[in-house]
Length: 312
Image 1 (cartoon, one colour):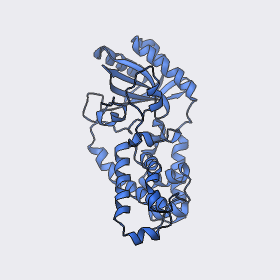
Image 2 (cartoon, one colour):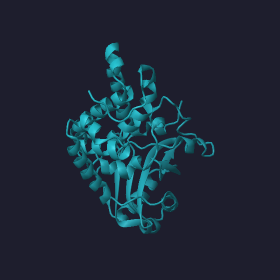
Image 3 (spheres, one colour):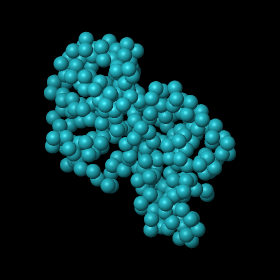
Image 4 (cartoon, helix red, strand yellow):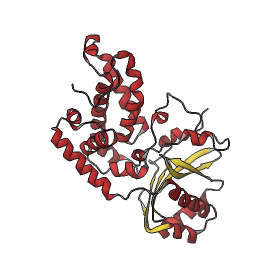
């Protein structure tokens, strides 16, 4: 079995230190913290099942683990389409909190302190985990996604990605190029400051149930997608059009007295968190263009909000 990337481990004593990198790769490939953790655990289990003599033959255990983790993710991506077809409503990636932000939010410590054992705390928040980016990744084939993430995000060479995909380096290069074209169709993100200003205005208009203000902040062709997973009530299909979205948001506010909106980073980008009685009910991500919201992704599935839950 070949190995992906340079790897930092040179012996069995160093493989525990590879976990953070593996979690980061797996989350970007799968869009799920839980599945990423499971994939990494599976890779480690395979390592420990190797005879000691075989372990000693592997010059870079870290690279070996990355290769195995990537192959496990590739298999999971291959079966994901069928699982998504059985999913109730729209499927969205699991949102990630910024623990430091929560810890310093005036004592509102909903997410709890950072826990080195928590896979969500191992993930680096950058543009490659922004919800808009992860949603684009969902449109790729499994092979495209693996080639693109490993090469364009983690800078692994095509010669070694070929070992993961079982294809030639040239074929892997073509896969990454195809994926790159999909990404280039999506508009580049606005600055965090610009997005934060728009999100703050959305929050204020939502709190005051000002439909006219919300309509002004939403692109006429805006789309809102909600993920309840069949576990909580929400729209099963995307809501299209700024006016319809504004009306829906105000209707939600009318039906949910006591709902508190907080400005919080979601996957490293300004977003909103709705909580009631200290419990996070919804995490909303936004895509903003020319000062108006073009997309809203609202995750309500409780299983996907576990990283946002108050400890204890």
